[in-house]
Image 1 (cartoon, rainbow, N blue to C red):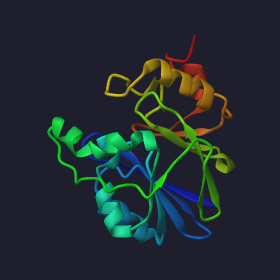
Image 2 (image 1 turned 180 degrees about the horizontal axis):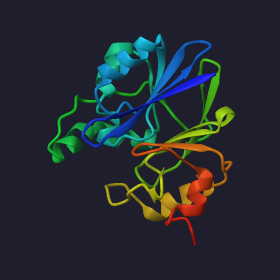
Image 3 (image 1 turned 90 degrees about the vertical axis):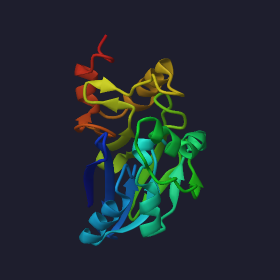
Image 4 (image 1 turned 90 degrees about the horizontal axis):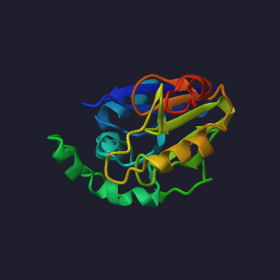
Length: 210
């Protein structure tokens, strides 16, 4: 059994997720958007031990709490190598929008397409999905039909591509080749807004309906 906690955090209400294996009580934090100590406290209240910190990408609103969660848990940080430059510039990027975040620590592990990550008895597969940002990945929990997709696909929308490193054609290719082939019942847990499913987006997303 698993538990997934969704925490909209920070000025952009970016969704941070805690994925917990209830049998082992091990948990992963996916995109520690803001308030890293609050994320750690939420996991602690549930009795979960955070063993992984996973980044879908390195836009500042997805890593604003990274320094604090690392300090609180010392769990290893995982990110795709193409996101390293953006991660190193996250503090400067936040300042451009008049916001302040602690300087993100360096990652402990680099991700590649097809990697698997073990959270207790649960296995996440890494899908490489660039377009919204360099080095963007999604984390797919096949056993429970759940996709943590960062800012690739939203309920009736898609990730923006007008930021540095964005590429609309690449984003659409990622969606069509990596996400849409997943089962229709796959729950899509995005970086902003409510959850959706692959089936719903095939039928109703104006960017996908031809």
